[in-house]
Image (cartoon, rainbow, N blue to C red; front, side):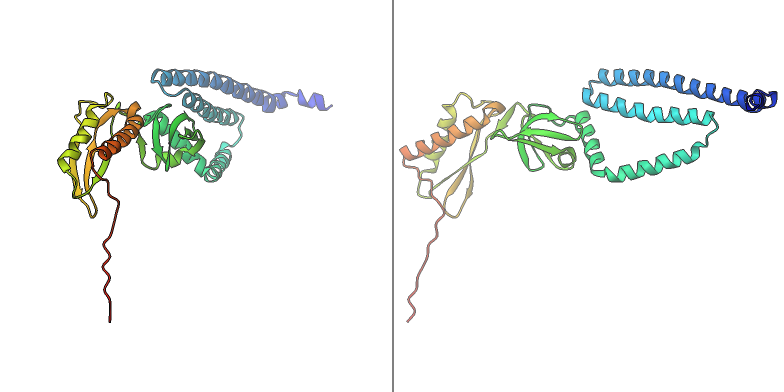
Length: 273
């Protein structure tokens, strides 16, 4: 009896046909929408790869875009079924706000990671100073950057800590200037000390002629006459040349009677009757 009522013309015209059309329309919207989403994602990823954007960022952005567009298609399909989507949008908005507040720090790291990948203030293999850490960049991830320190420690730094502060890229230029200061005694021969420093520069083939090295008096300090010594070298030779110059100039000063005084004070004592 119930089956006969269901197949009655009134039921067919009132419920079955309209709902059937709605279901077919919803399925069509969903399937066509998914097909369009795949085309949009493929085009966006192709454009990002042509722009030489990092593969990790390309994939991650594609996944985020796919999820957002799929939600829009699902809502459009539900609307075809006659379901009120306004309340769903409100729920999604509230959920998005709650998730955004809960993941505030993670989102900050993500946005900073995107900026680091797009603008590239450094690349893998560069020696940088960031967030109070000095190390070689091992990997730049979406949420963090991995540095390897000189003593072979691996340090993972949140990207927001890097992007929000100064970034010193030591490897950005092919040459570096070595800044050294040598203090000699007031009774020592200043001209001779400068000649010894210049001779040490001339004896090292790793020191560049252009820009020319500079040797000049920096200041007349309390206990010494300070001399600035500033040669230029290739970035890869910086630490080796710096160490060799310190050793060679110290030995040269010792051999030629040039003293390197340390801070000293004169103390005057008075006898009080």
